[in-house]
Amino acid sequence: MKLDEFATECDAWLSAHAEHKPGRGRFHWGDGDDGVVEIWSEHDPVADARRLSSSRAWRRQRFDAGYGWIDGPPDLGGRGLTHSHARAYAQLEARYDLPPQDWFKLGPVIGPILMAHGSEALQERYVPGLHRGDLVACELFSEPGAGSDLASATCSAVADGDHWVLDGQKVWTSDAHIADIGLVLARTDRDLSRNRGLSTFLIDMHDPAVDVRPLRQMTGGSAFNEVFITDLRVPDSHRVGAVNGGWAVAVHTLMFERQLVAGGHGRGGVGIANGDRLTELVRHFGRAEDPLVRQHLATVIGDFRVAGYLNQRRDLAADALIMAKLSLAGNLTAAAGLVAEVLGPRLAADTGEWGTFAWTRFLLGAPGNHIAVGTDETIKNIIGERILGLPREPRP
Image 1 (cartoon, rainbow, N blue to C red):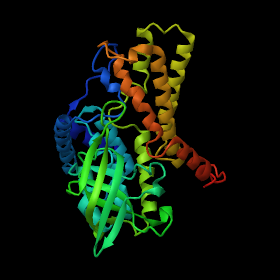
Image 2 (image 1 turned 90 degrees about the vertical axis):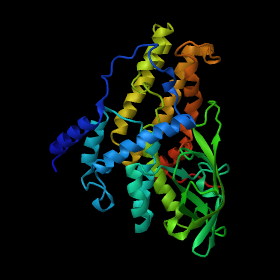
Image 3 (image 1 turned 120 degrees about the vertical axis):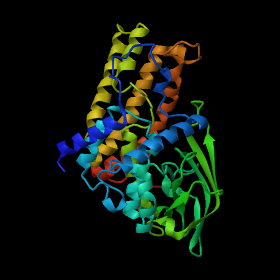
Image 4 (image 1 turned 60 degrees about the vertical axis):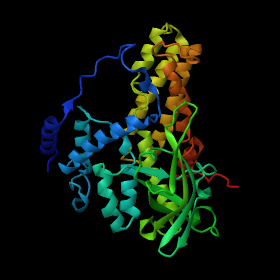
């Protein structure tokens, strides 16, 4: 189907089933919710359940109409069209006022992993549901003693007939509190060194052997969870990839996740990248004529603009994908520094003044981006070794 014909079809369907977003007017200081600048969406169990229900309903309606997986294979519920068709639909859908879809952000990560490494049975059982909204997925990789050094993971998986018994603790798990399935990295052979003895499994997050607990952060909220797995029996049919071949699956997963993080997540930092809120912040607090503040502001906005152009290359080059994640972390930290410079003591206590204390969660959340899906140092090593061809970092 030609792109223009497809776009006309999509726009007609969207117009019949959703409302257009109101036109984006100029940002005005003091209007709306000043809390939208937080980077990590915080948990509210009641609100989460309500939002998830409406989000699922939209995804199911969209999938059943043929727009839920436009570039996917027809035998799994896809439309069988190209990535260009999928991108055209996404651009049109962005114009409509729809329920939030951030619950399903790991679908584009776990789905391709199952397609690449999972059995046909796993693909048929879970991949369509990830696109239709029937399933929310999470990723269980990081541990208290194995963050960026995933090769040190200690969560164990012991063979027991045609099952595996999993035990261990995972941490920093997004969406675990509402997830239906989770991809777990576990150690299946302790005699093999580091990454050679790991395997990956798809688990049922509703199993009583899986205990999900909200993880309180310095922001005061709980955007992440810690997960305790105790004697969890997982059928071998739910192993993803070869036994002791989990490292390849994990690396592939992180490639997709870095693309996700580079493009932003949750509702975090609304109006930051385009500079609207930062510019008005500087004006409102009388710093617009300060040459150093003006220079800081211009640098931040310029760097976000460059990162936006880089993001447009993400599906064209792996180096752009990795650089986009690194630039996002740096840009958010630079923006946080500008906010702190302008607000000063207003960040220390909540006086009720609009546009002041609400920025605290932004500042406290920014450091997390230097850790997510690999620390900055890890990403720089990847750039140096795999892209620039430099000698490997000395290993202990």
